[in-house]
Image 1 (cartoon, rainbow, N blue to C red):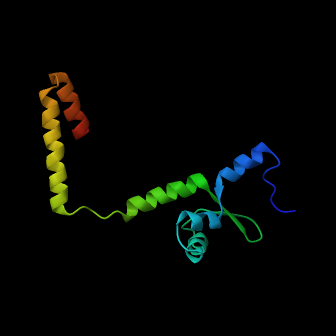
Image 2 (image 1 turned 90 degrees about the vertical axis):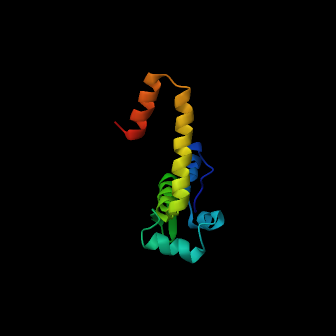
Image 3 (image 1 turned 90 degrees about the horizontal axis):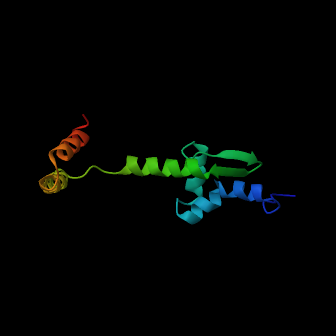
Length: 114
């Protein structure tokens, strides 16, 4: 019979919560071989629901992509990092000129984590 997701609204909701490997290829995750390799080695969270049928939970896959993106970020060069810190300090100084003493203390506490 196959998968009939159109028969009830609940099942349609279930379909929207999952990706298929073909969906990942269309989204640009990688080639078909890459998708299945990552499913097989456990990199991509997935579950088998039948013979040759794999579903990927949408929420867990999006969490995986976010973690992968963070892990792949390269650290900024020291010069760029120093420029960014200098800009933040300049903006804080501008803010402090317009803030009350209590607000300044809250800002410093928030920045230092105390």
